[in-house]
Length: 192
Image (cartoon, rainbow, N blue to C red; front, side, top):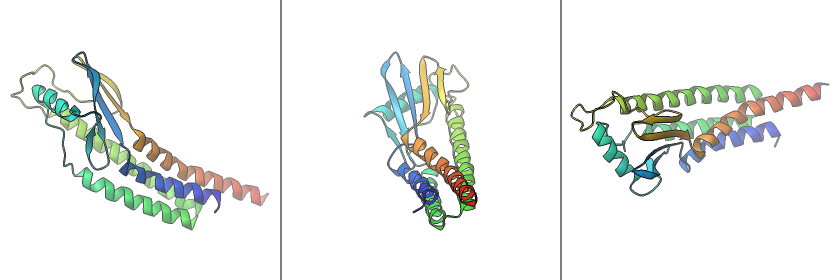
């Protein structure tokens, strides 16, 4: 199998690892939590880093009027279908081996990835702004966690970063233009 095809096929398979590894991690650290609380966002559910983390997240959020962490987001039904579909399409493009198809898959993945990040931002915005007016603590108008990076909210340090699943997804996406470039370079070398 030629290298460009191989790269494209590997790139198409890597998104499937989102079914194994989390996409994103959000952690909270404060004096009362020297071991940070953490949640891992998977493609189809939210998991906790340590037993009791979700319960503690929900308890703290309750005091400031935030909703409980969701267990049944519509994205948890849609994302798995999208990932399987896009991986199958990438595999088909990889076996066909046509260079232009590699870039088509790359563009589709960039669009879908951007839409996914925007959806995540909207979810975080709603989660941090849609506060219960009857909350015990009403200090801030928003407790929105960052989509990427670190943010101080009251006495908490909130960190939000991609996890292994998102990193592997990103590598998979980048393998498509790499396959394109390798194919183009081989064609130019053969023409000389």
